[in-house]
Length: 86
Image (cartoon, rainbow, N blue to C red; front, top):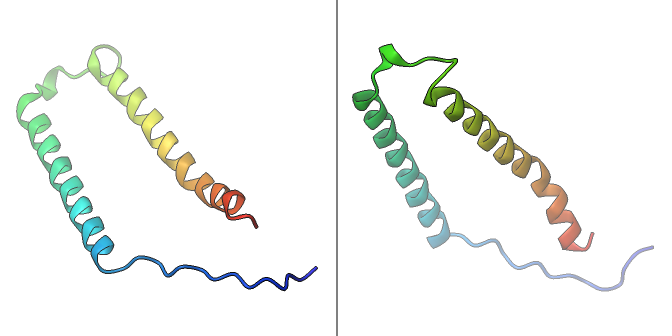
């Protein structure tokens, strides 16, 4: 069944929103570099154990975070279609 109703889509935002996204990514990059430097300078890497201590907990939460982000990226198109009315 074809619809006689014409839908007008609003144009995607450009210009300022792109600049804001670039600034956001730059800030994220700077924060990551600072976190890596702090870890590199403050952690005694000779005493890190993959069995006990803080590293296994960190690794578990890092794995959970990556899984959540990957799931969100994978499910985003499905959610967008369901809210779009398609």
